Length: 536
Image (cartoon, rainbow, N blue to C red; front, side, top):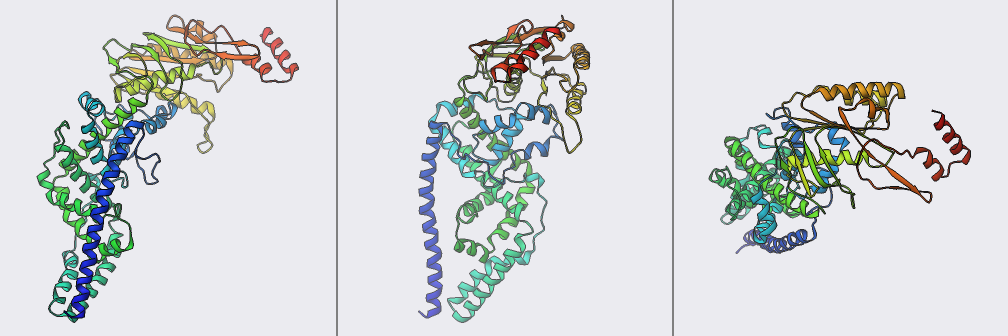
């Protein structure tokens, strides 16, 4: 055996050793991952506790919303007013990027997560839960893919498709003609490294998405084999090659093995370019089936996330939908973002005007009702002991603010927010929540405008309105169209106490001037304010 053959065997030995080391590492990582998955369920924690800098969890919703047939989504203002992005993050226990994107779209009312059988499997079948979770975790969130139907076909160069085999040819020639084989191998490796670096820039994002999809198909195939998972509308025989390549990518993918040696090996054989163009054609040919697998995997992921989220809630129930128009009933309803929240009961079969002091609980109560109507329809969950309602759209006008960039004052922002409530085209009930209506203008015009707007909305047949105000005068002006409810407080030993319980009737207490005293404003200011209010 000459020196060239020795070098060839050495290179081959290094490659084989690398493969063996990778297999050992993979087995070890699998055991660690399974153990971690069990820990996550027991401790009610997500796999990742951070938001990746490349995350695009709103991508699916923004991509599809203009073409989606049922456009009854939660609009941006309502999403912001109700702090639903925080709800999304707290409830997001998805393992995969596509699951995370669908979960966001679900909370925006694009989809529903409501398969009771799947929820039962995740909650009560440990083997099912661990098996499904493991496959989902292998997909992960390293890549937030472009959806397959958004990828643009990239024409391949057939000469470049031959390049990955040139180093192999050189190694074979080396066995018979060492000097020639070495030259061919070195030339082929250098050529492939240059081509890999040059060509990859033209399709890098598509490459990551296709590789991610290959893994989705591979894990989707394994998920379909697990007893208890629903049937998938994907013929995996169409993707045998892609699944095989996915296994290879598990060895040489950027996200699975670091190190300069492996990356150099990939470039030396133009692995990315070859695999990209090999599987690209199959994806475009069976695009609907690829998308069906995406939906299948993300649906499983969402039901795991829902099962876990429900376990984190102190109180929740499965809501009941009924056909009685615009009616809502609940017992011990709480806000899902608040710890130790005070529960409330109410039967809402009429428009409501809420009055009460600052910080007494009006806004929190309205947000609790609005959020639970949304959660009831999207994930069949309500943070109450009992929650019954008629499904419908939710619109809010709450956390308004001036906008320096647009030049809108607070009052102009409020006008735009309320004005959009008159442009809703739907056959469904509409639930409107308006907080401190028209507080951006003077008292006289505020009361007049508020009475006019709320009376107008009352005449809309499919509307149910809950509005909050500090203007007690509206309690009289809007009767009997609006039923009066209030929150109040008590002051004891120079401390103010709120019970945060809703009560019938209009507010009978005020606390603004007493708060001047309690917060140690100069006594002269407090006395003067008290005298002035008695004159008004």
